[in-house]
Image (tube, rainbow, N blue to C red):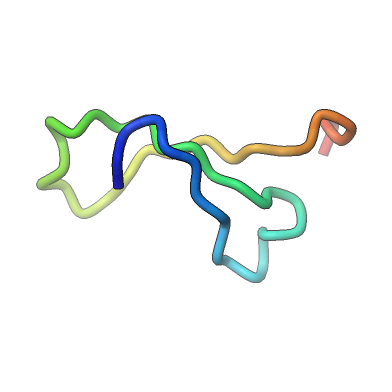
Length: 48
């Protein structure tokens, strides 16, 4: 995963509320087994 790339949410449990995920983790931390992401929502639905 690259920092600041947007990915489709593949998790069926949260995909409807958060269709896309923004990766904000620096590549410096690629050796970690986790990522820091921000779920993205449509502008029309900000109060989920």
